[in-house]
Image (cartoon, rainbow, N blue to C red; front, side, top):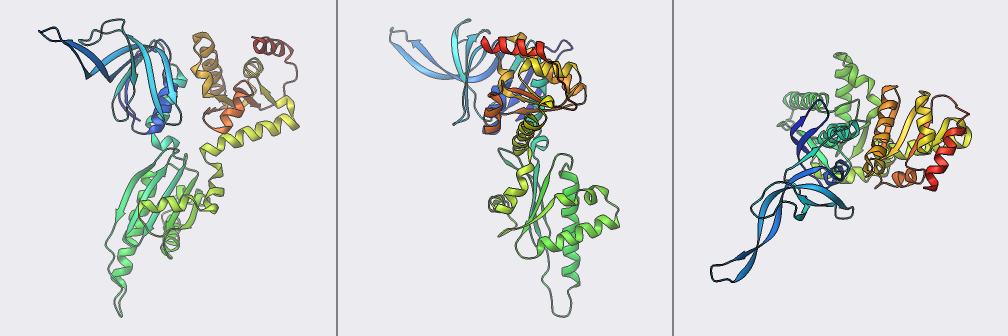
Length: 386
């Protein structure tokens, strides 16, 4: 997703202009939209025309409409998003108040205006617009003289840098030029890693090549890290993993990611991190039930006691049509963050998100046990009855 314009006032009202670039961006947009928002986008409208002779014809024209959003329909299989609403801005083809359905398109900008932009929605925009924030796997795919540095996100691989250095062949009796060129190449790749990979976010760096290029590069990398006292590389050494690839071109990434050894190593990345967090919650529920709560009222009580270590919450809850209820969830997230807790927002399109939805969509792992929550139990049971 690309952010073109952001204009949000002090009272949190305002608008943003975005361009969806990947199918995954439609899912982000679906989570941004709410009934009552104003959406301005390009669309196709069937228009009837009457000639001077009285004959009636119709044609399809592309126009830009501004709708007050009434219904939002997301097709998870095709990643298509349709928004229906009434026209709220004068247009030569569509009357004020007339209904229209806009299907948002990739690489076409849209402007979304809200009366209130809360912290959860703003975080979603930041996450969608900054690939480095969600790319917790990085890869260096290389061969002699060529290296591709890529970030791997749930929906795409993003080429961050391409390093190309001409390596002369070894000559009889003299390898000096070959060795110098290799060192120059390895140095350029090392600088690319330091410049383009965010070690706070990236949990695993795959270094792949045919033959022994990857091994020679790793030897050089950490020899230089010690010589230059580069603490970032030395502290993150366990994150590097050597993998075989058939070439140094970007397309080799597919075979690298399908390697069983890589699959097991990547089990702690962001997507799998949600599954692990849910497993930790279930273990806590089984062994220390006073430190594992679910249901909104229970979790709110724990938040008031400043006891929440990790909050698990489904993105489905932030699509609630009742503004007061949605604000309640946003307030809970803000309180946990303000008190030093971690917040994991689960995607309801993942298996872990579906499981969390069975627990009312919200659960928490606590720092310390809380026993007496009788009032919260009554409130939770009454909300379940509704």
